[in-house]
Image 1 (cartoon, helix red, strand yellow):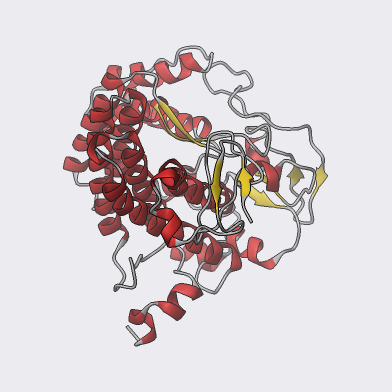
Image 2 (image 1 turned 135 degrees about the vertical axis):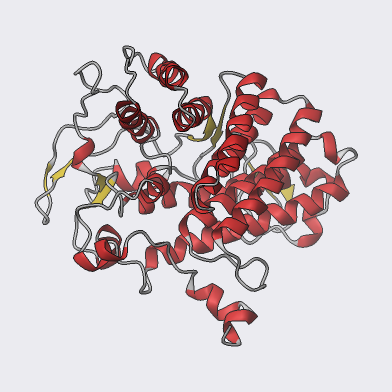
Length: 417
């Protein structure tokens, strides 16, 4: 039996080797799975090359929403224990939410690495083919999100590595991806990869004890990204039935379980005193059992809505933060205002480092609302949510543990390591 599958952009999910998608025509002999032999078929190269993004997409929107729960970005409106534990900062016991998120991101990382190896064999010129660049890129992004959220990360059954070590590994994937994207002539992708490189180096600045050399390198990467393409943006793409934007599906479809934290509702821009257009949400829909007002976030307008992975505003704000750290206050303000202008907001003006820092933090939390930045920023800035239980507040920010599946199958954990 043979079946025709359609996909808006030819994206499929192979997890593991499961075919999901609709749109561009391609055929497989097995209607439910792609087997190894089919993955090496040259006719399947494009589908194969798109699979790392599809695998990353599965976990990306989910981890954005689950990582919002411990911060001031998100909340949960029922009494489901796994969500309430996240909201109160309880990260040490088993939790179905971050257990699933680990498996999704670990699977995406493994698949991206495997696809890189296969493309090196299947493509005539893999090192100047954008498909190879994208596979490297999603492998780097998977590592970035594993390092951000989990306190250790084992790769391929090996002993676990620290988050900073995984971030360094992500850098190597981004370096390879950027070089290949440049050779392939894809300026937007190359700029976005350099932007993700800057994001990773900024993370290493905080993870490595605020060693300034990391922020200098982050600023260099951000500058390079903007020089390649000042308006770059790469999104994680969603299309049903193969994938869906879970931020929308879980928080904006009338279920009233997961949602935005009411502290973001009707957000007032501190410069203009008017509603900030970057925070879009429903009218108040009620009150939950914890006494919190219920709003649906409307940043994404449907299950097929794409989610930014890397965009130029982040490079500008990384440069603003770098200028602030180095005392170049006018340059910091200028970078902040470039982001504000794109959102239709009036200019911010200050020569006070404390005020500029406060505005920078506001811009980051508002510009990247529900894009997977707030978890790390609150940890880096040592901001402890008021909703955490006293024990969690005293312990401070901690990452999540690896999944039970990892512990059951990784020889390091099985041997008591």
